[in-house]
Length: 357
Ligand code: NAP
Ligand code: G4F
Image 1: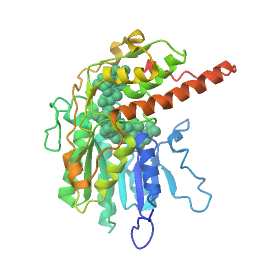
Image 2: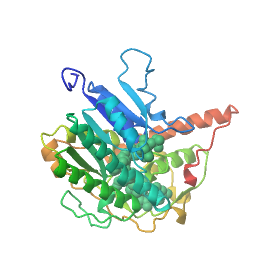
Image 3: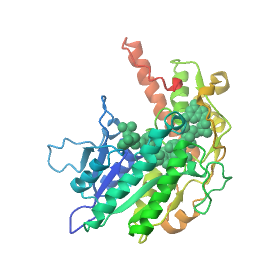
Image 4: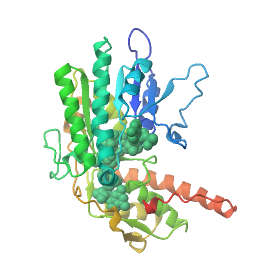
């Protein structure tokens, strides 16, 4: 694969906020594969939070390492500005977020600080950095949650109607991005991505919570899965396909906003049907409702119309819904088998407790 060239003849440089998350880790792999030098912002934690980067992490003391991690936080503007000087990025992908919708009702102020004001801080840093003569392109991770109560199909022309502190914060971030594009002529693009999942999906999002739990039930490691609303419908795609769309959005001649979606929607109970069928289980014998997973205001029905992305970017999803569910089930069945082997050998396996969250 040919190397992407940035300023002069050096490799192009990308900075990813949220690099330790599901999308950040896939995007880092994708960009490294295209010859980029990749920089990521990592929060200091008392435990390792770089597990998803293990496959691409290289000791910085070694020659030729093209992945660099910088301590920082989207709530710390001065550190963001300094990181731009250190990383000298040609492209910035702003993926950092408190990304859990239900949690945003419990941590509303923090969610707004990270998701809305965090984006504004980054844009301010970019404005300053650009004023010093640096050409940089910014991708803002928008969400289909911004459509909230609007009926499907949702596309770039659909008005936003957010239904959570998370969604309202993403709407603010969207409009900050549009405003900085218009006011300061910055190359800022919003990707409005519908739900995308994978083997690396956080275990408290409903798809992964289901595949982890059903696989453990199959192996006799647990019996019950507690869930909230099973009737909500989502447009679920595969995360690897979606990070490619992020990159494509930043390669356009002019900055623009794009919906990225499969155009197919399924309910949570349909996800359960398919996941359980791969394991030969009857999920109704194991799933119980727990009101703690209900949201004060729910988003009932998301189904995206990604015709603009198809026509202008040439982007289409490669992995189908059935393939997505299967690959997640296969991955989590393997994890459950490993857990069984360790338990049988007398090892203590920490209960990750996804069913409790
Ligand atoms: P994720 O797995 O929850 O990852 C979020 C990332 O943000 C993690 O790296 C996390 O770091 C980091 N982060 C959280 N708070 C931060 C802070 N204060 N400062 C710096 N970094 C912080 O989310 P994802 O699924 O990869 O999603 C990526 C982005 O796309 C998010 O902005 C999300 O809201 C948005 N989005 C996701 C979807 C989807 O279906 N996945 C759809 C539309 C939009 P830690 O690892 O330290 O927690
Ligand atoms: O998996 P979820 O938590 O994802 P949600 O709320 O759609 O948000 C995800 O996708 C957004 C894109 O639209 C992103 F912006 C956001 O960052 C995140 O990645 O819930 C999906 C549906 C909801 O309707 C929820 O009420 O599943 C329902 N659900 C039912 N039981 C549950 C549960 N969700 C979770 N997390 N846990 C449950 O036990």
